[in-house]
Image (tube, rainbow, N blue to C red):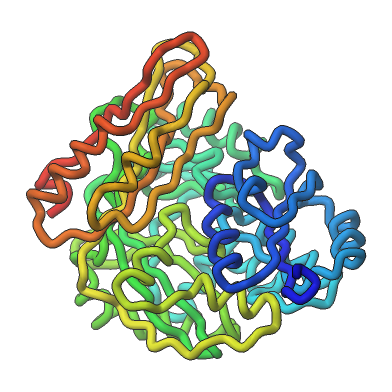
Length: 417
């Protein structure tokens, strides 16, 4: 009976949140999902949960009262900085455990404050400019300091483009703050993932990012794949990892998770941002598959005040790749069918599949849209490349006009090596 189960409220109901719902259900919990979508086709996680509310995850007062009425025992927010912020406020209102507080969250949400934090521990950061600097070397990347997920992010190749993109980012920033950084196109985007497990900070894994290529300006910041582990991992652990450990330890968190994004250029690691939200690549699937450790489970248990397992988190040498398949339409379209998940899941060594399109979703013309993400383990480079490229034949969507849109991107051995 649900009365005997701990109740977990999950903020957000996207395809990504389905992973949180399923994990909570596997732990014997009663799951509640909330967002303001009345049309559940736009909130697919609601179909998986025990209960769903059509209440905005930003409506703290209403959620707090509803949570008290039904006896919510814990709150989780995964894949959005803004939902994490609301989780902190809601947990505070309800007196429930939360793996992060407002002060800790602000350090990484504000990109300028985060860079100052890195400097305290001798961690290099990407070069920054002000909009009035006379010695700017183009290209530069412009982004709001307090947004995530690529919102308001653009690359400028001239001063006029910089000013235009700066003003656009300024409008999108909730606090009216924008950062201008050197755009690094001669290095490797490198991510490292850390878990705080019963006050012990552990390196979870590292990845190299493959950026989307083959298009002109406007697509430079689109990421198509993450490779586990990074080819820079050994150097990172030797040189930079101890500094990152000290930096994260300074937060004095008991349990939690953080990802830190950097560039490796000329053997130097340059940091540009970090976050306490779960990442869209869902690295917890990789870690669970290769080591049995499960930081998503730990975060859920902590949110409910349940005992958290002591994991010996170790970065694994086993190779894997998370690949994003993108589509593009030459005119405005509306999604009418979803990718064939059943056929895709039959592939060997596929450890996770996450769809990113919804029925009724509007597709803008000549603009890439993410269709689906697949993560799988591999030992043979050629077989991995063949599999990624073959999967394109099993993924498509049909629009309301009857147009079939298939993924247009694959991968090469050179990119994956």
